[in-house]
Length: 188
Image 1: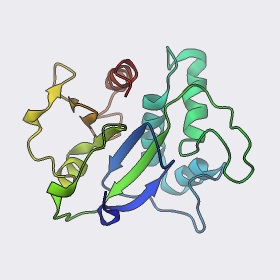
Image 2: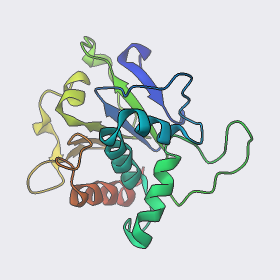
Image 3: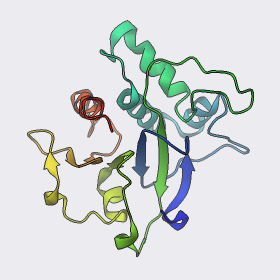
Image 4: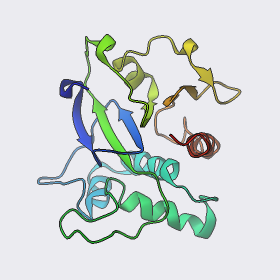
């Protein structure tokens, strides 16, 4: 995929899931996505909006049977290390997090003109979050996708999911669970 499509890419090079969003957060000076405090720094600077985004991402990435078990301790641990791989890149030590899928976040640039060049590789799940990100990625007619829910809030085709924006008003816990189950039951 062309690097001109994205203003930011955070997370491992070979993720299980790629989330696509239209707007980047403000970033602290010298911020690194793999730093142990990266998510805390991001939320501190950007507030509740980005706390909700990373929380929803963490819940979707959780492979636990019940994401609310132990007051959500598992997805909270996943959220705090959201863009890290199984090991710390600086020390090489294994990071002990709950069973999870690893994710990457891509911020989609506006005014992309080469929609026909965008290819969604089948070895990754692609979650296009909200209509703006979907349009930027060339999805103009979601009718070619199959609905996962009665209200057609989540559409899918192979490993591509068209979802609401990552906000609880649009993407409630029931839809998060539906997304999570679809991905984990249809593992790539």
